[in-house]
Image (cartoon, helix red, strand yellow):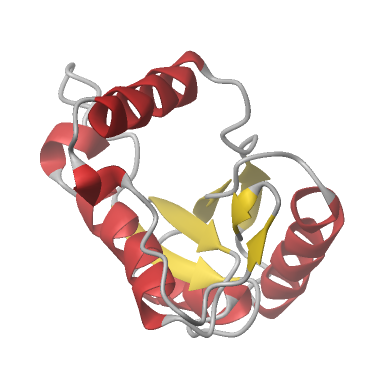
Length: 151
């Protein structure tokens, strides 16, 4: 069986972690997991976090192995490649595999410049230009603001 581990950075903000959990939930839907030919891309999906939230990568990997998965496809839900995606996440996956030696794992690329990302960016910009303020960043008195806007 193949499991999909959706890996987020992890945040002290629950809503940021909830986004990763929701992505995992949506990817678990049959219309996302299936390939259209009756074959499943993955049989189980679990969210995990690099830091600051649970389950961490080793625990999420363990949940998938407990579900019977021996092949783990790990997707870093990160925008671009960096130290976390090239060093920290592979190191955590290697630790997980050491705990579950009858498994193997593969790591996808982060989102990067995939055409779907560019489509999503364009949609967010179009939403804001059209006056859909749900797409705007919520700025509060506690939001640090620089010369380039809120950060």
